[in-house]
Amino acid sequence: MIMPRIPFRCPQTGAALTAGPEGLLRADGRIYPWLHGCAEVPDFLSPADAGEGQRASLAMYDTAAATAMYRNFLDWLFATCQQDEAAFRRDLAARLRLAPGQAALVTGCGLGDDVPAILDMLGDAGEAHAQDLSAAMVAAADALWRREMPARRGQLTLSVGDAAHLPYADGAFDAAYHFGGINLYDDIGSGIAEMARVVRPGGRVVVGDEGLAPWLHGTDFAAMVIGNNPLWGRPAPIGLLPPAARDVSLCWVLANCFWVIEFTVGEGLPALDPHVPHQGRRGGTMFTRHHGALEAVTPQTRARVSQAAAAAGLSLHDWLEQALAERLGEP
Ligand SMILES: C[S@@+](CC[C@H](N)C(=O)[O-])C[C@H]1O[C@@H](n2cnc3c(N)ncnc32)[C@H](O)[C@@H]1O
Image (cartoon, rainbow, N blue to C red):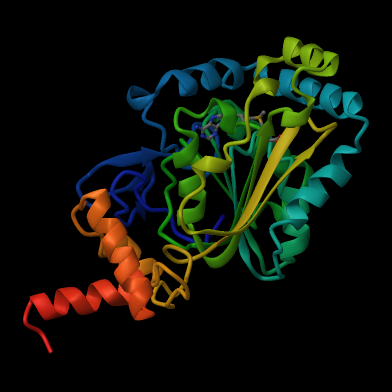
């Protein structure tokens, strides 16, 4: 029996869930059923909420033929990009900077091909979770792991659901990983924000998908690869990272046809001291310039204030603070 150490939570409300014979149960009676034919793999999908991207992904990946077609695609991709698949996946997983005994999440896991490299870093005491929108992919991954890696199946917890609504508490994992599906998410920013939400501060997020390096656009190479698959023309979503992203890197891999973004999860906005005084004519600080702006005055008044401040040997900030304090009757 699989005993996940990181518990599932309701992806809608965050409420605790308890395991029953039919699935995971919320206190109000809502049930997330076990995936048909798979022991203790919950299905969190709400098909009624599916947007256009989800429907496109399900049409592509949630069919009986999808798993064989997808394996065929991977073989074509790595042969075309002249890369050894296992070595590529190891290099990408290494960016998670995992240590033995930690816990990692893979979103949009497909057949789970990234999980072995991640478990190698986590060791025997580590814990991997993997989820995918497609029940067919997850069922195939479950069967594959039971057949080919039975000893490690107990370290892997699988689920079906939308990666933009993850069934975990904040900060549950040490790292989160995604490669190859996010271009089709209905909301790419939410997909990345959810990965960051479930990673503890200081943990790593690695995410990548198709998208040609910008300097190749306009070349015949670009016309060929984008003509083959329009998704290869997608931009890297660097502007969609959450404000808490730190130590961010963006690079391109697989013949510069896929972008990879990696970052450390911080807390809130970056730390800086907005109260350090500026030297020079304007004076003030970043804080006073942003929060202390006054109503507009005439250009003539502005010029006279500037001259008066210079004559008094003060910055504009200090002259205005003094003049206004006097006028307001303050000492
Ligand atoms: C190209 S495959 C990549 C699979 C795997 N990451 C790999 O590298 O082999 C994309 C996967 O993303 C999944 N996917 C697409 N949209 C998703 C979503 N909103 N939530 C979770 N998985 C999604 C698809 O079902 C599919 O299995």
